[in-house]
Length: 158
Image (tube, rainbow, N blue to C red; front, side, top):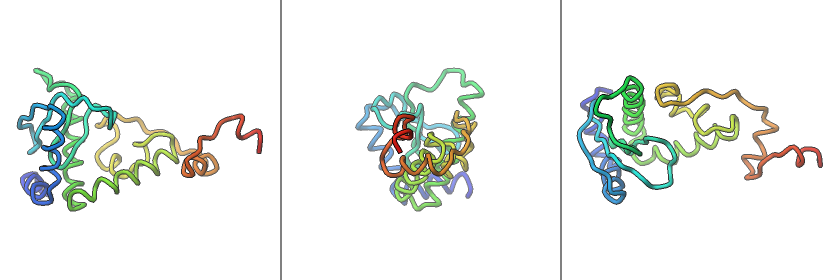
């Protein structure tokens, strides 16, 4: 999708307005950024724990935009810009439960919500500051899917 079309689609599908409401309720300062992004600085809520996350075309940042943006910050914004395309492709807010399922799958298979998350992989793991973790055996993943943690002592009791 073209870079100008995505911000428009995310307005129409209501994901950007929701992002702006979250930014406002969180006391963020919003400014225009590159790639049609809206940068919301100063997000302080507990979840999600990421240093930045995207709602529609709004990127909520835990800190502020650096005065001289580093290459790492630019790569992170590219990563978040790819998420805006994913919102548009998912028709907006349905992206959120789809992302949650992908994060749950990744958490079960790797112990990390990003490594096998199709959305994070599509946005570029390294650009988002993530490292790829190896798959763990399904026998280790099943207790996680059932809501139980597998510990060494629990494995010995079986």
